[in-house]
Amino acid sequence: MPKIGMEPLRRRALIDAAIRAIGERGSLDVTMSEIAGRAGVSAALAHHYFGAKEDLLFATMRHILAELGRDLRDAVAECAGLARVRAIIAVNFSQKQFRPEIIAAWLAFYVEAQRTPALRRLLRVYARRLHSNLVFALEPLLPRTEAERTAEGIAALIDGLYIRRALKDGPPDAASAVALVEDYVTLRLGGRHDA
Amino acid sequence: MPKIGMEPLRRRALIDAAIRAIGERGSLDVTMSEIAGRAGVSAALAHHYFGAKEDLLFATMRHILAELGRDLRDAVAECAGLARVRAIIAVNFSQKQFRPEIIAAWLAFYVEAQRTPALRRLLRVYARRLHSNLVFALEPLLPRTEAERTAEGIAALIDGLYIRRALKDGPPDAASAVALVEDYVTLRLGGRHDA
DNA sequence: TTTTCTTGATTGATGAATCAATTAAAAATA
DNA sequence: TATTTTTAATTGATTCATCAATCAAGAAAA
Image 1: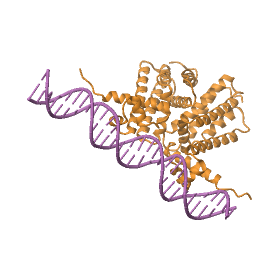
Image 2 (image 1 turned 60 degrees about the vertical axis):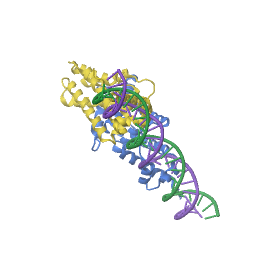
Image 3 (image 1 turned 30 degrees about the vertical axis):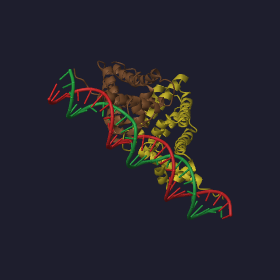
Image 4 (image 1 turned 180 degrees about the vertical axis):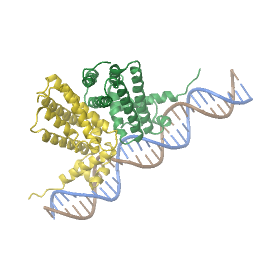
């Protein structure tokens, strides 16, 4: 049996702790000690495994993105057209994604991306992937240009609902968010739900 | 003639400098020296007029909000119904509002609002005002519930287009943003443009 | 002269990053 | 198996830089 070292465990624990810390403060302005403390280790160890704070934060964003990506792939498998679009929307507002910590992290990373090229690239790649996904799903339902435009609208709505959610308190209301976006899609499709 | 002191001049210069600094860094993580330097004064003077850094930042956000509010009032005067809605949209993407510095500032302040209750309140008040404005304009065109929902959609789209803009480079493309939001409104109105 | 305006220098706190030293675990050797 | 050696894991203490905030004192204006 392959006995594995501490490294992956610690890395994972630190990333989880980072998400929690960021979620609670609502910004990336958290100290290494804070994060390390939450993970039950010393700040020095966090540096040992990640190097600079920036690297830990980068890994954290990548982790969030990877999870979302996985969820998306799973949800989208075996469905096409409108069902596919709806699945994409659903994942973005799923219980796992649309919760305060993750929302806060998204926002904070968006801001950080203004400063940090690597982060900016990361977010851009994600945005492009989402766009392609949406266009691919919409393609059979709409002419190309319309599909592109609709995808843009959906993406903007999702981001907008995320950012606006950050101002409210209480638990997020995913249902009404989903409804809003789906209504948009329905309107765009203009009755022709032939898929 | 009433000779006025330096205070208002300095305050204004410092706020402008803060906007520029925030816009360039893309975050509120700017030093007092940086801001003061841009305004052509010492950091100590900035403290003299504003007290804490937090107060300067708060004043900066309030200034941005106030300008937007003024623009909005001006644009909205003497128009009602659809024209009013379109005016509101237009202002949000006007040359004065929809530019990199302001966009970056909005984003950054949204994040900061997670931590700072006063800022949160400020942004909330603005959000509510925008909402009422939109609902008021939509009321004659749609049933109440629909108007509410449409207003939410418009607001989310605007915020979403702002945040997404932050990832792109080059000058903002206001025209296509406006078009996207207006299309949404048109769809929501579903043909009945009886105002 | 008194008040307003302004700054350089200083203080104090914070926090990232490093390092030397310690313990625990694994591997190698006898 | 027992013993030594090597490697991995871990941290407390320290260093170093950055900045907000203060203050005493100087220049300008009233």
